[in-house]
Image (cartoon, one colour):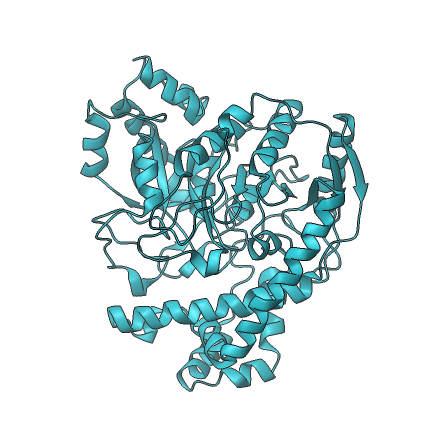
Length: 497
């Protein structure tokens, strides 16, 4: 197989070639590594190589599963691989070697995938850009001056650049959908409860985090999610799983849907014209395909939701930092200043605000459920702006120094009183105000790459479905993929930064 042929196949097609003996897993692994070596110096998408472990797996004649022999990358956060560290993008966890696989990693391996590396992520996955101080910034293969998004930004960049046809990702506030939108990929955040978690920890952030993938094709996303979804006797509850595999559901066309769309956001009152064009173009295409499409008011107050989301997130971040301090004896110098400041906000807020935020989630769930009584899907931009320039949201050095002082003095209440929470909402969620709704409510949501800007950057649209509508979202995405194909639209050769 030539490098050009490798780039022209998705994971499903590569698996078929391996099964028919037309190419070997070892050959595919060599092609994936060659592609990585050619493009990753400019992207910084892949931050670890599994080396001989991957070589031995590719050469194993007993390798089996629906994706046997296909090269694959996992995220360096929440997808532990036994014997290798999972840094979570942090110097504090640089040597935190996993003693066993995460359940999602086990299921990737059971599917026959050849995991050969780990992808870049921001510290603790806490940002919509992938720019950790430990690993350095990941860059967008469509234009390396711009971000590939986050927190699964390394995975998004690696897939868009053709290193692998799909890669592991997870989503706690948009971390599958944001990089999918930034890189022109498919990314489904699944319904709460159906994806694997643990055994290292329970459900991330009380169920807000779900495991998944980013891919170039809808069929790859469907089949890879089929591979990782399943009952777990160690889970806290038994979720109602779909009766028909997602890959099988794709064979049945989606019916006529009623879709409400909106670009409105209280966090960003003036979305970029490209984001508006993305949604309006999607609405026009959906209408042409026979769906009933109407502009609507958002079913929720996204500014209030953002405040509740960050209150919960900061409390979780405080717990993560505290764990690293206690378990690994990590000094504050091994954490980023933004992380310390956010964790201090979580500590200083105390229990009551977090409990109030958790209680408020019920209101968002009910509001979205009421919306879905009328509309099958809620359509929004995935991003309010095209992918940002790298370091566009970087905290100035003087404020980083101040943040470290405030953290050391446990002066989080001072930060709250000075309006720092409002500033964090504006700085970090201004360009991604649409994605947190699905995480807080547990609803499925998908990025569909239907739009490219005038400057050639991807900018996707998001569909949010009712609980359990994962298959319907994939079927709708497949219909859009057929009507307006995107899978083999590759970036120009990646330049050197």
